[in-house]
Amino acid sequence: MSTRRLRLGVNVDHVATVRNARGGHAPCPVRAAKLAAEAGADGITAHLREDRRHIVDADIPRLKDEVGLPLNFEMAATEEMVALALKVRPHAACLVPERREERTTEGGLDAAGQHNHLRPLVARLRDAGIRVSLFIAADMRQLEAAASLGAPVVELHTGHYCEIEGAERIVELERLRRSASACASLGLECHAGHGLAYDNVEPIAAIPEVVELNIGHFLVGEAIFTGLTPAIREMRRLMDKARGLA
Image (tube, rainbow, N blue to C red):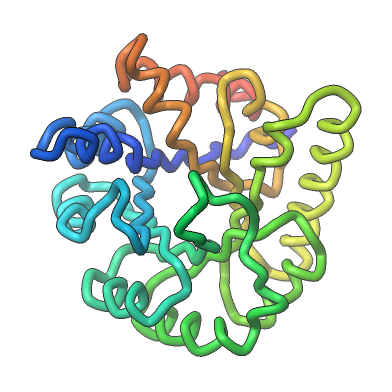
C-alpha cells in the first residue's frame, strides 16, 4: 500500500450541463470549482467538447484564472482545440477521443493508431509549457505509443472496470495495476479516471503508481443529495483510506 497522497482532480463538466439545460448562468461551474478547491481538490478538470454541450469557451479562461487550482483542459486532438489551449495556456491538456453522438467518452484514445496525427499536436502543446496527458486504455501498446509521442502523462480509462462486477472486475483491476506499473518503467506519470464512485474508488486509489484521479459525474450527482463539499470530502477520505493515510 502506498502512503503517498493521491491527487484529486474534480471535473465540473456536469455543473455546466445543468446550467445549459435552461440557459443563463446558474449553476456556475466556476463557483463549483471554487467549492472543490475549498473541499480539498488538487485540480480542476473541464472538457470543452466540439458541440459545447456542457463547458463553453468562456468557462475555460475563468476556470484557469479565478479558481486558484491547476486546470486540466480535456480536449479532442484537433487544430481548433490545440489553438484554444495555446491561447489559454492551462496547466495541463488531456487529449481524449471524441464522437459527437456519444453521451460520454466511451474509450481510450488510440495513441498507437493515430501516432502521426498526434505527434505534432503533442509537441506544440509541450513546447508551450503545457503538461500533456493522453487518456488511454490500460494496454501496453497504447502506453508505449504515449511514451514515444513524448507525452509525460497518461490517464488510464477506468470506465470498463466501473461497469463490470465480480470476477470480471478483478481481472480488469489487475490489468490496470499492470499498466500502472508499466508506466513507471516507461517514464510516464500515471493518472486514472472515468466512472469512479464511492463503491469502486478504493482499489484504484490503492495502486501505488497512480498519482492522480479525475472524478466528476459521480460527485456532481452526489452533490444533489449531500452538497458538493461533503461529496468531495468523502471521496477524499476514501482515497486517503486506500493509501493508508486516513
